[in-house]
Length: 115
Length: 111
Image (cartoon, each protein chain N blue to C red):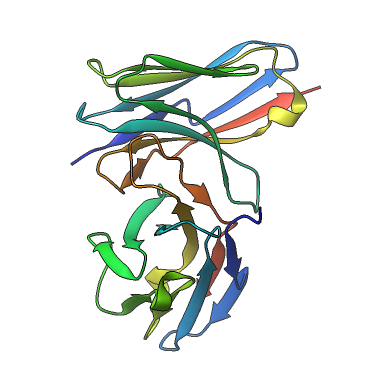
């Protein structure tokens, strides 16, 4: 069974540009999550999809961030326009069920650097 | 607002030692607690998940305990090996979907 995959692994962009991150969850996992870790801070929750619907987007920092999951398969996270403080590692995770017993499986992350 | 603290921030031990990593959280209304391992440049690997109704979980040389009332969890690693070197993260399930993470403990096990 393939794990959670993310693309690209690294992205370096200029302030003001647009970047789109992609996440492919484990096949059959309805739940997909985005997290972010900025330098020196802990990993923080951004949002949660159940299939194609946003279940919880309370962690999204502002309206420059747009997440989609068309068709309930892969997800994209777009940052437009990017700011310096958006630099960090963006992780995606997926789980089969929505329950206290279910493990979230994480991808390797996308390291975003905004110059 | 849930806050998770991990102590120590870094730990260096010689191979073979038994060690304990600590995690504390401020709100005891949790669904579960997970311990993850992160190797440099890699994603997070789930080590153990403890449901809120459980007291501990074991996997091989790893044992994690949970005391909800005091807001604490410990990860015990027996007979540490150089391959155990990594950052260990504690995360508390505070909603149906949300994990709240600590900053992690960076462990170095020297041969």
